[in-house]
Figure 1: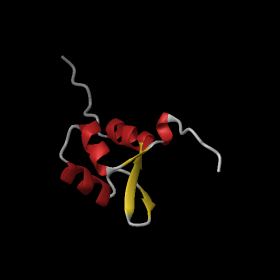
Figure 2: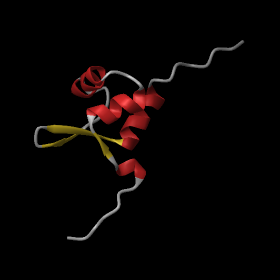
Figure 3: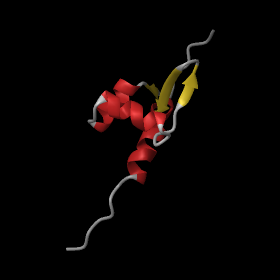
Length: 68
């Protein structure tokens, strides 16, 4: 088997990693993943999140900039 290095946007994160990235609780990360708010990859019973999908989640949830 060849050693393959994944690009940053291809890394698979678990719920603890997602929680750390978003600065939220692990339970909240699980809820977002379970309700389909953040796209997941299923590996058996495990759920993982691609880094690029996590970044997309953040981009899609930005509040609009207010004018001063």
